[in-house]
Image (cartoon, rainbow, N blue to C red; front, side, top):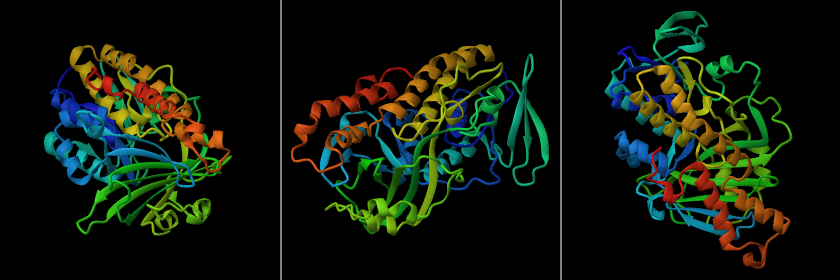
Length: 414
């Protein structure tokens, strides 16, 4: 590689992690972000041990642990509050690294601060929306326009371009112009946060119910000095059409709260949790079919731009983080940029394709689906008559293996 900065298109979690990885390898880069300013967007996110290992190597894990909740357990219930399955997570399960539940804005801020500290204050160029790239024999040019004003901006020529520009990636769209819009899964999500008292262990990630009648994911993402927590929740309900709804628009509790009105858990007042939310955002649950290639010449894709997946495995951000480490390793190992990008793709595309499909078909909440189908959405008298703990453990273990964080795989090279 030369000293010419690599152009990273997109300043999300994947792009920021890639910049830190490249800096650690002595490879210069610059991030071009479409947003006019970096703001704390979204709500909660989980980072699994295979990804926190990478963040530890980048020496940002300590900062993250100061503002995150270290998840102790994953717990599954039906909509009637009956316990189905519990398993320890992160360090509590024997991993060397934690599973973290954190506000996406906190994660993004800490990564962005680290990039500016290490690469310089001008390492993230804002208000630069990529509209396309032109491959050359010895370089590649990215073209931009202002997101705020719509005006064309000067193009940037570099040795390599990495498309980290998310599920609506312009780079991906150029490489695959006939692909079409993201695929709607048939599920609408409402994400929110509520300040509330701790529940269960105070560091539990709970999945309850099922999509047909209403599924809820709940976990704390921030501890407060007064003993309360910021609780992240996701309400998910099957809907035949997304109705061309806006992406990440403000949600209306009237659209989903009735499905949870009779949920009565002795450890959590679900209707109150939803009713007292600080913010509610609505999203269609979407992904894309795995691609047959990510790379064209001196450009490739990373993170959601490469492999958008439905968020049912707590694994989207983690896979972007793993992409960043592998891309750094490939660029370190081969002085030919085109060959390095192909080597990165050869490693990561099959793995992430498997995760995309697993998130569709057999994510961790397949545990809930099995119980829902076998009980006909009614309370059970004896769970062992419905499903064994061994079968439940098998569902969980199969997903971990596909996603690359089964305990025995933790030290496997990424």
